[in-house]
Image 1 (cartoon, rainbow, N blue to C red):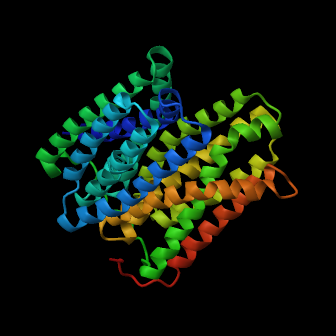
Image 2 (tube, helix red, strand yellow):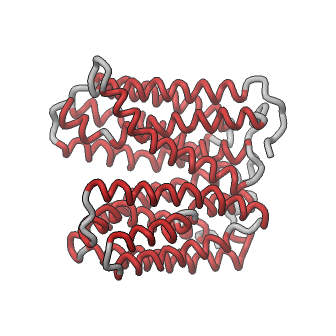
Length: 383
């Protein structure tokens, strides 16, 4: 029982850590998608995921059952893998992505909603989120190895097998119920202070969209910035991103411990302030040593947004499905806006370095939104 929740989380994380790096290669290699067609296919897939992540968790809130739709999501992932492996045309593959892929991606959202509904505290939520980071460290290299050694369909098979294991783990979790929750967390979350009303919640969601837009812009542009602006080998971009991903796991575990002593909003404000410093330093750094050295700041900022941010949403919104889906969708909207951030930042007099200064400004604006939403808020929880 002690390892059931962690193993379930790891399997769900691996599903999408396998799928995301493989998807573009599958569409271009198996179906001959052009760059333009690939962009449209991924846009439609992400739009489907955005809609599914809004509707399905809200329905789960009404029934109070979060594991049953997770089982459906696992089945849909298996069907999606099979259809992508057997499809003979790009339009059919895109239809499969939209109809099956969007709802299939709700599983991880529902897992965090289930944990909150079952009584998990902030430390347990953050520690579970750390397992998703473990999956994302291991998943992409394994997926690319399978593709290189055995072809794209081997990665699809790995996704289907992982989804089947996720189905089994979720079914066991459903059968044992609250008994699967860890028993070593007896310290209550610290007093969150005044909790924002509906307007405050909207302000916090906007703030997190800004935070996620900055993070998505910084990561997606890293390889171009390192090679073109810093004049370094592309290898250093991979090393920097890998170091940040590796440091993210202990950062999340430490944040889980700190969540027992400090409120979520305080941890987020401090963590995002660290992020502002990181973006400013990234715009000024010139050497590989400096680039790698500041990744500790990057890891701490992202871990705060990814782990503590999720627990903040679950504290200020009673309904577990709604709170988790709002958090996940803030990340998706931020990723969509990242293209505009990169375009605008590169047009400044600083060139590509201006992108990271824009990220610093967006992060500072996100901090301001969180502070303003909590200042003077009534001590009630939003519905």
